[in-house]
Amino acid sequence: MNNIYDVIIIGSGPAGYTAALYAARANLKVIIIAGSTPGGQLMLTGQVENFPGFPDGILGPELMERMREQAMKFGAEIIYDEAIDVDFSSHPYKVKTLGEEYLGYSVIIATGAAPRWLGLDSEKRLIGRGVSSCATCDAPLFKNAENIVIVGGGDSAMEYALFTANIAKKVTVIHRRDKLRASKIMQERAFSNPKIKFVWNSIVTDIIGQDRVEGVKVKNLQSNEEFIIQCNAVFVAIGHQPSTSIFKNKLEMDDDGHIITREFVKTSVPGVFAAGDVHDKKYRQAITAAGLGCMAALEAIRYLEEIKMKIK
Image (cartoon, one colour):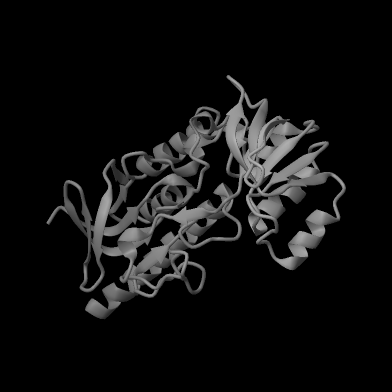
């Protein structure tokens, strides 16, 4: 059957493309089910300055295109279709898309995670122009900025605030409640930093600026007062949602929907591996996703060697 593959990779982005590169170079039959909008979160990123090998930086979409081309150069197939169901109950495993069903002796899940956004039209328009969900990726582009706004109250928001405080002259954290959800130690660090100011019980109702961020419109939820805070960038840190719904009850996952792994990339099903933001809640960087994609491919290669020996 033509649809039987050594490795099926679900998802693109740094993890998926790197996994495909390593698996294809090992002379395996590899297919990437990239989704209808391939490339992951970097497709929404402007200049990427922290990916090794690009001292002058590179646009996120261009980096993804180069990774895609490199994987295909070594023979990886790619389809722009959505995986809608999987069956790990029998071997080879089955992955069903909107248009076809594929069989694979191993599967690498690299479907990533989607940041939760505020849901504003102005937010969508200004993504990559001062609006971002990753301060550690994009804040260095705003060195010496007069003010950077962080939206959120958890550990990620405090990490972003502390990180940007080393870059900007001032950081304003806007949180919809009157206290933070972040861990005590992160709260203490943020409160003790003189550059970080807090706006409590408030939400961002609009982001101001035509071609770049110039400020935010804020509403106090207790008084209904509305006011404007001038800023150069807005980093939204209200959580991420892993793209793992089709794996529910088929793989071990935590309460947030992240796939639980052992030995970095091994899931609860032998021969099924996870790479990138589907299980990495801590780092969520392009380079760490790529590294995990490499690990997943190497583990898939070892697994395939083992099952071939068993079959013999």
